[in-house]
Image (tube, rainbow, N blue to C red; front, side):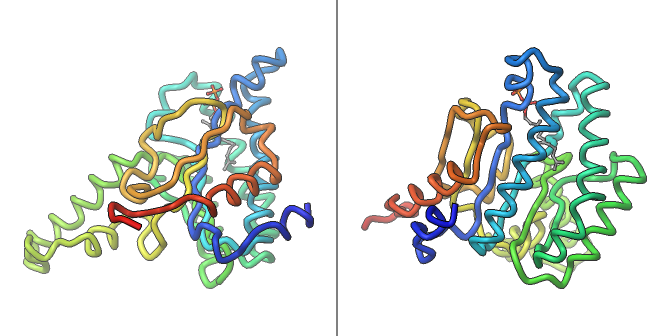
Length: 243
Ligand code: FPP
C-alpha cells in the first residue's frame, strides 16, 4: 500500500472525488447471501476508502449512500440500511474526528428517524471545525431535488426583495447547493459495471472525469481507488476549451 501511495503524484490528484458505491446487492446474491450482507460488506469498503482519502490528504470525498429513489426498495432493506447508517455514525465518528475529517450530509434528511437526524446533527457539529478531508455522505439525496431546493431558496430570497433575478449567477446558485463552499467534482467513480450517473451530483459533476469499474463495491480496494486516481492524473481536461 505505501508503495502505491508513493506512486501518486500529489500535484495531479483530483480535489474532489465522488463515488457511486454500486453492486452490494448483486455481490451478495452471487454468493447466496442476503442483500443486507452486501451492504454490511460495503460499509467495510467505505471505511478503507475514507482512510485512503485521509492518507492522501484528498480535499473532498462524496459518497452516495441513499438516493431519494431508494425509499422504493422493500421495507426490510430500507430498515437495514437505516440501521447500518446509524451504527456507522455511532461507531466511526470518533475516529473520523481524530483524523481531522469534516463530515457533511447532502440531501433532505428530514424523513429520517429522529435518532438518525440527531446523529447527523451531532456528527456534523463534532467535526465542524476540522480542516482535513471534507467527507460528504449523500443520504436521501437526488441531484434534481438538490437543484430544485436551491432554486426554491433563491426564489424565496427574490420574493422577499433580497435578490434581483438578474443577479442569479453560477456562484449564487452554487452557494445554495448542499455542497456550498466545496470544489466541483473532478473524478466520479462508479463500481459494479453500470455506466450512468443516477441523479448524483448533477450540477457538481458538470466537468467531472468518469471512471467505471466492473468490481462490485464490497470488493473495491484502496489499490483500485489509487489506480483510478493515477489514471485521472493522465487525463487531458479542457473544460470546453482547447489545449
Ligand atoms: C448500491 O448497491 C448501494 C446502495 C444503495 C447503498 C450504499 C450503502 C452502503 C455502501 C453502506 C451504507 C452506507 C453508509 C454511509 C453507512 P445496490 O444495493 O444498488 O446493489 P445492486 O445494484 O447490486 O442491487
